Amino acid sequence: MNYAGAMPAGKRSTSTGCWSVNGTSLEASCDVRRSLLDLLREDFGLSGTKKGCDRGECGACTVHLDGRPVLSCLMPAVMAEHHEITTIEAIGSEDELHPLQAAFVEHDALQCGFCTSGQIMSALAFLQRDAGGGAADVRAAMSGNLCRCGAYQQIRAAVASVGASRG
Image (cartoon, rainbow, N blue to C red; front, side):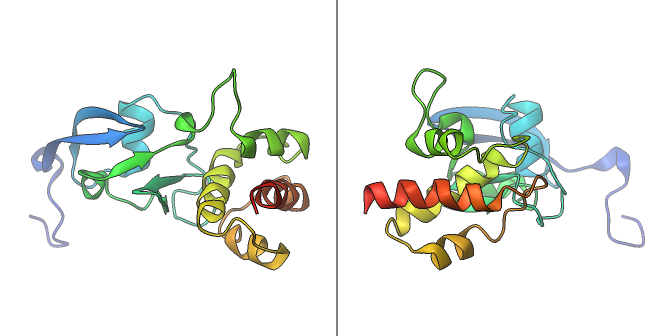
C-alpha cells in the first residue's frame, strides 16, 4: 500500500463475478474499482449506455438496477453483482420500438442522440412508478439528465405523451 491507501499498479485487486444483464447471466473478471458503466461497455459490448461526464452529473449512463435508475458511472461493478441490470438494449427493438422510444422519435426528442438512452431509462423508471404525472412531475423526474442540444421541451413532451396514454 502506498501512503494514500491505494494499491500499487501491480497489485490491483480483481474479482471474477457474474452479472445479470438484460435477463442474461454474464461473467467477467474486473478490478474492484471499475465502474458498472465500463464493465457494460467494454466487457459486455453494450454501448447504448453512454459515458458523458463520468462524474454522475449528466445522466447519460443511466441504467436500471432492480428496476430503479442508477448512474452506472458512479456504481462500482462489483456492487451490481446479484442484481438485475437493465440497459437501453433491452428496451424495445429495431423492429418494434418501445412506446417511449417511439414517442421520442415522434416528438423529435432525439437531436444528436447522445443523451437519449439515459433520458429514456430515467423516463421509463418515472413512468413505471407514476404514469399520470403532470408537467412538473415530468420535469422533476428528468432533472438529472442533461441534453447538450437543449431538446428539453421535446423530451418532456415525449414522456408526457406516453404517461397520458397509460394514465
